[in-house]
Length: 589
Image 1 (tube, rainbow, N blue to C red):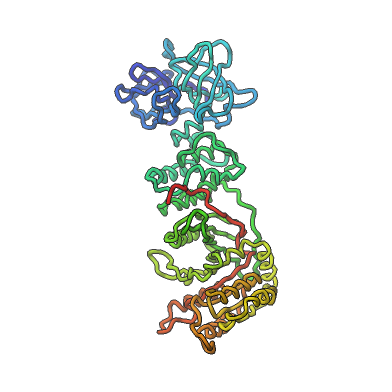
Image 2: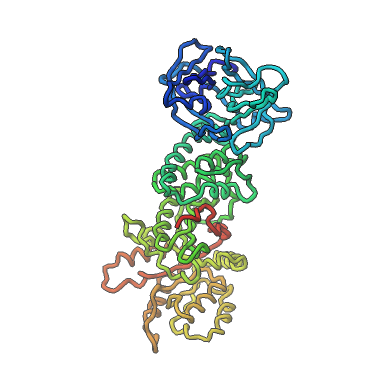
């Protein structure tokens, strides 16, 4: 570990500096050491393994522009050939600090020391200055100070020889024996492959390699201005309101990843970051790779929600799609898609979008959500919609651009009322009503015909009280349109009725409602659904929709535009979900 073989002497024109071998082919040094590389060749020598030099070229640069105060004084050199030397080994990002501080050793090549010499230092404090470097000070008042020739030298722990940083500058006044060090986490920020070599809690080297490759691929989308998220907002969302502030400005996805790897003690924050980042990947395979990484890596789950017991059939595994009006502007909507495997809730996507993009985004993320379901899971697609949008025909949405099959024929599709989902009182009453329904072999259906829409508005309160705790399923002969029908629906929802069924289009009659379309719908509904267990209604409605969509009759099948509101809080995730999207870039349309 303390071998000096990987220390490198670098010559570029008139400048002599130091570097250290990080792979068999790569050497890290300061950018100012090789500043003349465009005009002068770079020669790298490993003095403790002979005097033969190797040519090299700059393959990565930290962005240093030549000023003493500028950040990013890092360069990575690629050697003309591999060298048979064991590269440097790295310590964790926190190992350079302590009480008392550990002794740090630099091995450099100042003037008249072609074979190298040692300097002993220690970190003054663990706070980054200018978000980039750490101050170091001499271990003792005597001995070798940091002078020209030490630039690019690795600072290593005296007891292990592991690298904790790189020397970039010394004080100009010889009487002031201090200097600057770029710590390993900052070096990794400028050269991502280095992150895989630095020990981090919770993640293996292979996991970090896969993450780096995915983030690098997504950075192409970021560079083209097509990434619809802000890296710092994504970071802050991942660490939560009580999480640490970043030690430097987060300008890129990789900056955020480095903060989460090296500055946030909870590995779950990086898992959450990657899971949410996947939502913004345009490429399906890349989105899948990011999501797969987040689920295969260290991921302490959220506390498990209660699961509905089932004697004969497995519980539903819902894919929850919540669509609501956004507060970010007229005509914009908040869409959140999550999946629930019966134990844990996973966010699949969360985005604020204009109206024309809502359906496509929701369907795409529903498809992604299926990848997270267990093969034996019973899928249930549940759309949570504001009350005034409950009649939206989501079950008739085509599955994708390449498949026009209605979503409701492929999987059980139900709708839920957003306002009711966010009411603690109504969620409690719904749970109580479902416990009552568990004791029954079949649900009782109460009819609300077309003629009821003309009732006195004062009857709405009476209907709420009458239905509360007494109705299992309410079938409507009309959709929730018009003041009368909307009032009836509101009364039923406020009564915590577990199941509502209605047609998307209703009766057109004006005077008589005998044998009208709504009455026929309720008759057929009672014939097909009234004797079924309420917990299995989503499954049976899917079968009905499948039959309706494939019907060869000239007239539309009675169940073609059937809408089902079905809500059992015991098998759905916590209704208190994400209220806004803190990861979107507000500057984007």
